[in-house]
Image 1 (cartoon, rainbow, N blue to C red):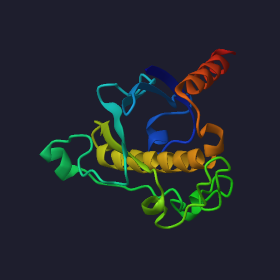
Image 2: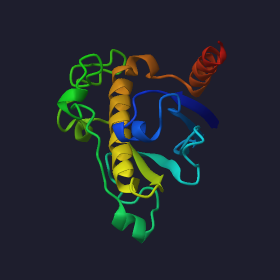
Image 3: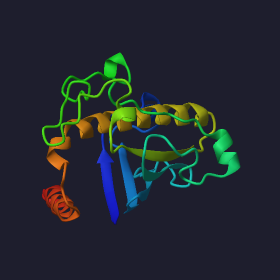
Image 4: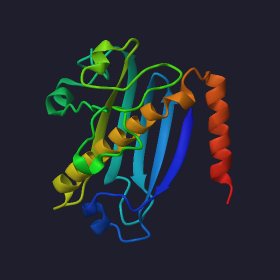
Length: 197
């Protein structure tokens, strides 16, 4: 399934807001989803950032179990050597500033599944459990800004994913036990609402 999304926002790494003036904060996300795998490309809609110089690629695979695969996405030896592994612990805030009582898996219990609240070690006790393995590749080929921007974007993406997974867990009563047909209907409703002025 192919999706194309445009994001216009102010919540970008501070360094990126220096490079892109106000009004140029639109990102284009193209995703090809074929569960259990997906791939997404994120580029700038602004003519100020070339697509050949700025792109974020995200490859994902969903597998049963908790962090059981060392190389779930079949990376090369060179990529394995260079990668940095981050495990997102959704039951804890990423930092004190990211704490949100509204979307807190450490206090939420799903009324339909009985799962929760989540605490240290929950992922080793729950059955079933699934791990989403992601490889993020960030390319920002602008002299003098590359390393700083790639680090800033990486930190920002980690925060966005962490916040999204916390929210997803705290909304599990809405999606638990939905069929693929139910999900397709929800997607169509969302797309209809997005397409209206």
